Image 1 (cartoon, one colour):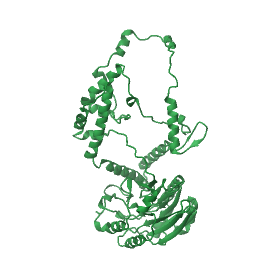
Image 2 (cartoon, helix red, strand yellow):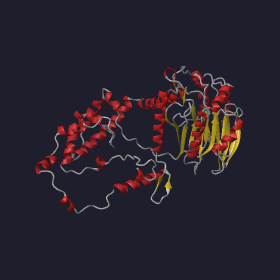
Image 3 (cartoon, one colour):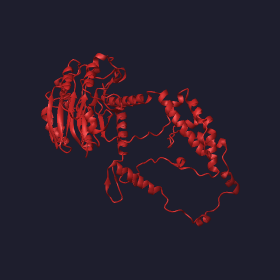
Image 4 (cartoon, helix red, strand yellow):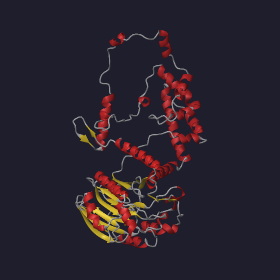
Length: 524
């Protein structure tokens, strides 16, 4: 089962349909169906006059945001969609219902929360206030009830008090799975804001007390820690986490493992939230990747030297080399978590800021900025084209299921790189004229010297693409005094005729399209 809550200034909660409620639940909180011009610093003034409203309704961004919602719905097939502050008159709600292809519609008393529901779902409105609407949904397919509270909170903490009271009233009234989500217009602590007026406990203590008293909780979070941006750059730039999803214990028991992901902010000042639910997904260990900024730390070479000198057992030398590489990578990963404790979170934030600065080009449509924006859009479209979403197999059938795509890819490339039979007849080689003298041949077959091996390694570019071991040329350049002799011995063992293990001969396959449109894996 699934569902969706989409807000204009805030965001949506998408619950997508699946064969079982314990499979996958996609829940996206998509913001801003309209262009919010009235957000002032810290959203202290959230009033919008009639002229601004009409401008928002007619803005291009309104249509782009709704188009994004349509694309998400086509992909996930949401059971419930809710729009917070759509910047449209409520009389247009049926028009949007038809455009989404939904079967039922409704709005709260203020007209700032719209909802659309798919067929085979019975809907009962339990609470209807200016800041929230609570629905009791009966999922006919699963014979289950679900309570969904969609929130679009006021900007003022005093005006939010009725919202907390209305949520309190729901506690204990229904012993059912309960989901509460949307734009709460308040952070939970000072770590959830960058820039602007400092956060003090008085700002969020009512919110926190309400959530804790109602036994609601959050789950695993992926992506940027912030969901809202004030649309400004430099010292005036503000990031906050205003949008979130809460669950009760019954909801988690029913839907199983739940993960919330903050997606990129596109056509909105809020980030969509993607909720995945169902059986716990197998955790994959991220492959190791050498990070160049490690080399700038004073302890880097000491960490490598200490762990490279650990005695390893193996014969020939490339097995010893493989063991040492493994030990050093494990040590660097552990050391990085200690020495650069918050670096990956900061990288996420910086990437978010970069995306936002790209959006600023739309606010200053100069010729120079227009070119930069067009290049960025072209790159984005190129990246989209590189995604393999479906493929045609040998019998002409198209497949889109991810597991089938993976199986077909493995089968195709296994056949391509597998040798059907071993060559036994080398008679044709006698027809190839001998071009080398015996002296030149001896020179080519001679064991390389340590200097020759070093020269080859240092001809590698420092930023060359990492192989399966995750190490770039920079690692070997800077650590040559530590690892150089082992590299030489490994190369020497190869020239002496030792068989290379598969752990050293494996590689990465990079799929590069040979045609503008990819139909089969043969086009890659």
